[in-house]
Image 1 (cartoon, rainbow, N blue to C red):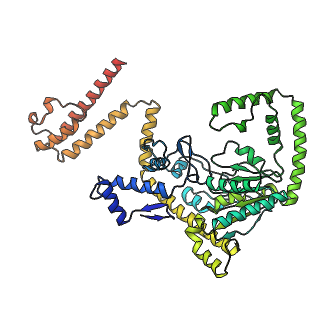
Image 2 (image 1 turned 90 degrees about the vertical axis):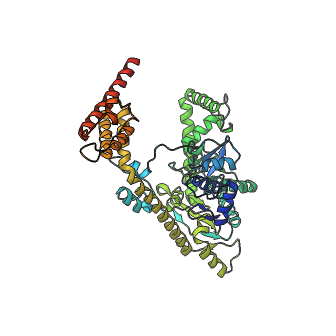
Image 3 (image 1 turned 45 degrees about the horizontal axis):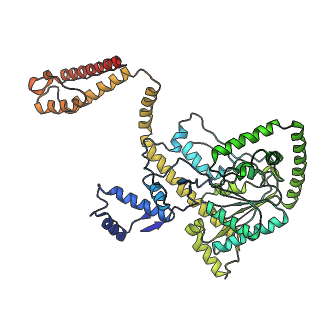
Length: 524
């Protein structure tokens, strides 16, 4: 087989097809009776080669849980289709669950189109302006920031190997930590975040890790990520929607201190995430303790923390604000911009820089050859970075190409979905009528008349029943609904008009329906 990294697909070669046919004991796997075998085999290879643990999914409590590639968050209850999830479960040696069968689907685009009014607000929409216009007919307008944005976005540093890149990241974190500058490190996977965490542990640098495995304290960790000397490692979730306040959040500090003083309960952070019930009980006990505290004590403690945070805020501002380190470029510029946007909020200073390697996924797929040749030409060592605004622009061009490619895929999906959109509207209108207990009696009678009309017109093309075979074919179809009486059988009918037969069958079917309805009423 061959692997297409750009499309994340697996293609069987002729030798692979021969081997599969031999293993399955069939002559042609592309025969209509064996076509599913090909799909399952390709998904088995994708599960083994393309889908990576702690990046595309995690294993938790004996289950394979998908990780959202854009946010880094777990998606419990979601499963891959067409046997892919089962293949991953077999790969990870956990219980293989039954395959889900999708009964109804709708694309996100057509789902959003169901709303009469559509609008949104985000800090990173400009890179998607073309798609929002073409799909939703929505114009993207840029609103000026409340205060001038003074964050400094430094050029990317590109290394020959991943190991050299991570060594440089750790050295950068160490240097920044020693000066007291808060650091937020963004990674693309759980695996990478834990790898950096291990390296920082060896250096003795205290830090917090925020990823799909450790998400319970997300808001608390991110709210304090702006405190001087704090190092936070996060996947793409990176506290989206939570402001990182330079100097720390006094309310968050107060809550943390009060929780530590709650002597009658264990501190929640020490509890395993799997003990949800016990965790909830202790959470309730702590909340009760806080409610019973003297308000004056709370206010005094809060004011003290406010003063401390203000002092730390001024100190961090003097140092240059929050420093963002990206360890890999994402396919979408929007995700990179969201990471950068953690710093320099509300007019605060800050810096951001991406550390890249030639074997990063995006670089390997789109830019490694050209950038690698440049590094070879200048004779750069493995641990010597290439810093060039030209290369950074080239990488952004590669991201733009990927975004365009992904947009074309989504656009094609929408175009295909538009074909069945009208059918979906009709079917769901009928479904909604049933769910809302509308009077379906007349509607059902109308459907029965329409079906009889369709069958009569298909089986009897002329105005008269001229051949016994015509009537036999018609009655065979009608008998799937209702038993046909003897006076309508072919041998008992001679030269009947088509309209007469139509009316006779409609009356027959409706009488049968009404009779069955009366029987059900008696049972009720």
